Image 1 (tube, rainbow, N blue to C red):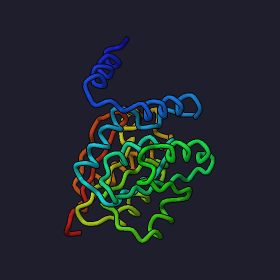
Image 2 (image 1 turned 60 degrees about the horizontal axis):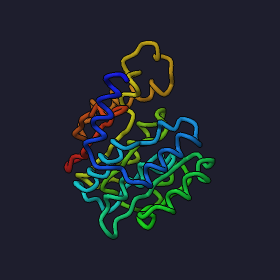
Image 3 (image 1 turned 90 degrees about the horizontal axis):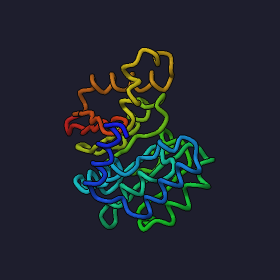
Image 4 (image 1 turned 135 degrees about the vertical axis):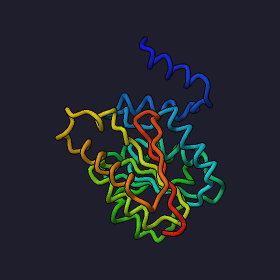
Length: 215
């Protein structure tokens, strides 16, 4: 076992357990779906839950549901009466994801919507306190601008995969459109004075942004 794998194993043994339901969901995701690694997984799931508990949002927007792992993880941290709205643009994902969301203990806190969040989320008429962006990397900037438009001042926006498996600094991926999208997004955020920002090298890179109150 490589040192990185040993360290990851050590970390997971020293944090809160993900729980049996999420464990089974992650396993099913990797067995039944292509690109199962896209699911947040144990470490990131516990981090997202804790961030929700710290921010205490009334409404969360998620862009990119995939198998529902991150949605359920965040919903576990929500207080009573709070809601998570999660958008998945790929309608072929619904048959797998909806039963897992509806079968979870936090199903009443999650609204699972098939559609394009960039156009559909603003139509909800909801002001959000937190957003988690994990959709098409080629449209991250557009998704981010949409999220800013429905976010309360002082709210938090979290973007996943912002180190993109190291491809952001690898010239071999200079023509890969997903990599180009992430690089453009990272440059855009670095120069955006409307938010405070930090990149955490957790898993595939997690950028946490706080919307300034005076924008």
